[in-house]
Amino acid sequence: MKTLIVYLSRHGCAEKASQLLAEKLEGDVAVINLKKEKNPDISTYTSVIIGGSIHAGQVQDGIKKFCQKNMDRLLHVQVGLYLCCMERGDTAWKQFNDAFPEKLRDHATARGLFGGEFNFDRMSFFEQKIVEKVAKVTESKSMMDLDAIHEFAEKFK
Image (cartoon, rainbow, N blue to C red; front, side, top):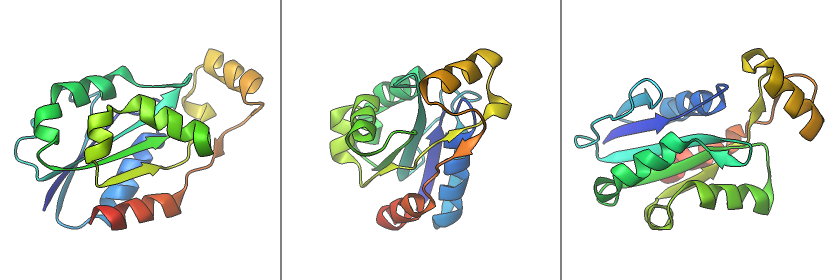
């Protein structure tokens, strides 16, 4: 199986999740940051995993554009979708549903919420102040769900 993991990450959480996921998958696995390679050729892959993270309640536009541009191909290969976010439960699943097109969600073999992180070292001063005010967090905090990443990988295999 030849798998492509594509992701966008602003502060590193979705990137970390992609790397952890790649280590758990079998076969030939490539990982591409859509910020560096905006239009990867997915035609040679038998499976594609797409991941992003939530900022101010929304996934990155590049994730939505990638899904729209490649929808025809994605519906003919095995697909996995994941999201990194600090929300839990229904709110997190609403963000997930808003992030990915319904047609793609329905087609996906695996869907996952991998938790999130506030990485103050990678945030601007302004972003730090927003997190402090809205989330009441004043330093870096990780709530990555390693079990969810493992379960996703097992289901995707």
